[in-house]
Length: 66
Image 1 (cartoon, rainbow, N blue to C red):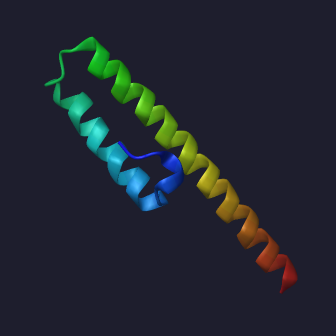
Image 2: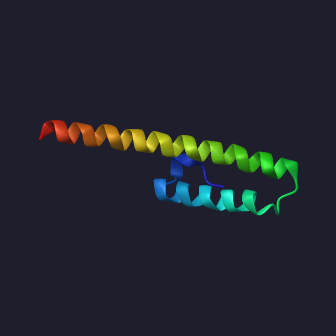
């Protein structure tokens, strides 16, 4: 798993989708692996949230400058 600081938003979303498919598939029975997936998903969601907030702020500033 990559560190979130080296990911793009698109890569983070793709990784989240992969984790979700694995969790929903029911193939993971190891509780430690489930916990690791949930932890990573939480990190990725926080990263995406920050990215969206940053982009929103940048767009607002650009619109204000117009």
